[in-house]
Length: 139
Image 1: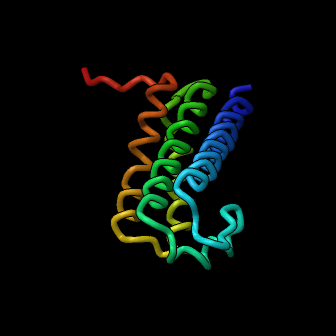
Image 2: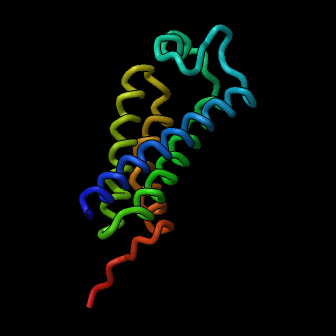
């Protein structure tokens, strides 16, 4: 039963984080606008229009990535039957890998890329702690 719950924790974390991420990106595209002709859910369209994204677009993408990671890590930690932080970090590493892949496609500004990559794991840790993972204490 623990293996099923463990697998569910990771899957639910990734799905939840992805939904939060995509929803926030969609909402931010409505608020801040997106380049003329860009279809936000079409990878080829985003790649073709990436050079026209504004600082506000990149800031909102950074926010969406980290909020999605934190939410996914939170859910994974809530569901995980044991070692909750490990499951939160698995979700964080998943989103980190996806973020690196996305950055390789559109070549965003260096500052955005560095901030994005450096923040995935800290936000996964925050989500894991909020989800019930206890910090180890030294004796």
